[in-house]
Length: 519
Image (cartoon, rainbow, N blue to C red; front, side, top):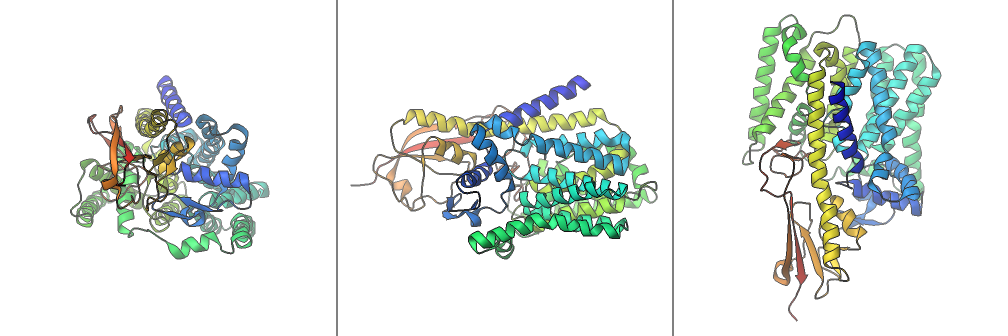
């Protein structure tokens, strides 16, 4: 069994280390470039990400701590993928350490490594880490909470100061992580540690300093701007239901609970079971009516039911008499879900990370030591990261192949995500919605799957097809085909990933055109 775990962990680690720049990594690295030019102006200038060039401060919805961190590594070792991913190793270590301490404190030392395993081997964590801000923010959040809990338990101000600093920094990695402050305040008051509340002022310092810097350099606080704009945000129902789907796909702990179902629910387990079943039926009906007219995917409904059962059991499970932490963990879970619905413009696996630790801490002791089930979850994570690598690497290869094919020519491209990073690495120019700058004979590259934004209105009339690259999949799982799988944007009826034996439907089709307007 140890050998199997070693192979799974090694596989996940290698894919994570070698993964090409992907999805929002491009924005994070662009901010890092700005920092290397002027450390006080991380959001300087305009950035053409989706539909048109905009001020960078309006494009990005996150603070720049992770970009500052990556800028150090870019300055030393450039943009080699393995080097940039290695920069995130301390955050992974901090997350593991934080879960170890929290699990030991809340459930007992014998469960400490199980808590680490259930979180780090979740399909929501390492497969989607990339170079984005979510896992670093999550690690600082968990690490800071672990330090604070230890500080209260031991009456040690060093732990409290370290915890407050880490928790405050989590909000500089991801604004949504700022709920660390009210969550920890609740825990501190619950523990009746009135005298320690003052140390929480340290957690407010990082976001205060960042906001003051905004006022000084730009005349506007970035966080307040985002609060007022809330642009592009989907209705809360369209984020809540996909959130339940994503939560159900984040862990297999539920399956270990089934043999202990009656014991876990305790007195009244029969009516509780009926209530959970009714709630899951209601979720399915809500899903079908909210997304009426959209394709319905069985795998999405499966994960929706899993998420519904998971949340239902968390609410109805009998509390552990020997441990008074259950109420805090439920508050943590509720706060994480509220933030994942209210605080983001759309749902994604990475937005649900903060809900994972309280679920693990509540369920790991009740599920018991289930190495086979944990290994199965690890294998699922390995498949997800392998499939996502298979998708990400295509854009790197496509950019390289077209750079060689059209060497010496003026090449334009449409699209964003990791494709944008590699296209610009080869000197391609981004196609403006107006077509401004195009000259007769220029080459235009247009992927069909990646978000393209607006194309010039006369594109179809004036573009002549030259070449087409069709990228077929290698892994029987999809992460971003928007035909049942949307790991980084769980929108409408998609699941975060889907299993399929369809190897004919391509991951991507990229077409090269010659710009040939009439004289």
